[in-house]
Length: 141
Image (cartoon, rainbow, N blue to C red):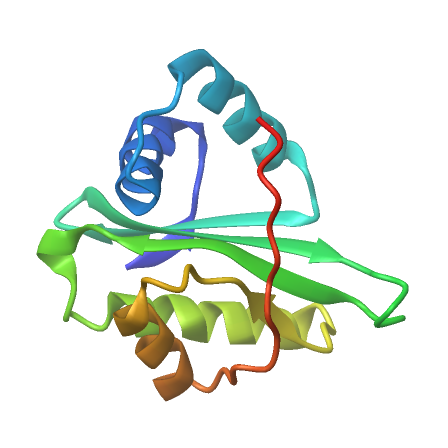
């Protein structure tokens, strides 16, 4: 089941994001960001539950960049706990994202995915997204 995330999901979401990023985050810093984003009408957090346990997380950030001149959304995080992959949870998340996009009149949904995540790239393409851009990064800290 996919539902909107709430503050009670904090610890589960933190563990999922740490799995995605392969690093541990400071709890207080993470909690502050999570809470702030839950209050932001341009941020949409969703979780997937199996047997009342949170096993997946998706975040969408709405914006209106000048180079689009229309509302878009960026899918910033999508993670399914490795034990629950293959159950079509990711597809359910993508469906929710597309439906929300229609409701909110977004012209597109875009995302970045690390070059090493080849399975994720295949998943996104199977689910209707196309590879059209490169992302360039400069680490500052």
